[in-house]
Length: 218
Image 1: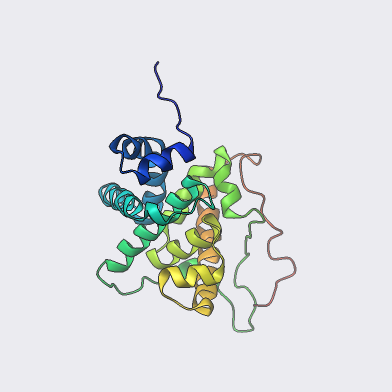
Image 2: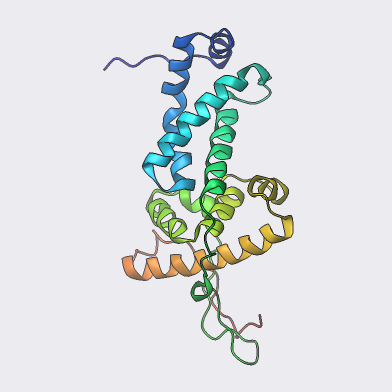
């Protein structure tokens, strides 16, 4: 099988800055797959993700003159497609925020957990790196309402800090912290449900934290 060689960033950048069509085609070939996967995580629609990637490449081509090369080209392109996906999310018609109350911990009248709480010691980005749990975690993240899914993707998967996340979604750092906390709680619930349904073997499952030791207060 004949595979085209990977072009070095410096060579590719030189061609892009000169407006070389072949350089742009190479850019799309080398980075399009990862960018499409990123767009899909945020937009959850193949057609819209494809459009977002095309738009991101156009934006990158226009801004390539201002790229100083302080980071890898792939890192810069990743940030471009994330921002493009976020702009598309913001441009969608504003909808009533979907509640996730049924996925959050419940408390009794005395402020104790009304049922056993299962916590996961393993962060979601680590779970995504494990073959056995990757698809399960992606399915669970996809079940979160858009506003919660976006925050958990930016903070736990894209590893943005709170300030960056707030700027990216046009919110405040405090609102991001609250939304992320609720998103993580909801994700724990969804993971627990998924594990019960799939009956994963103990070695395949993410390690649970000790559940509800001695009834904890909220």
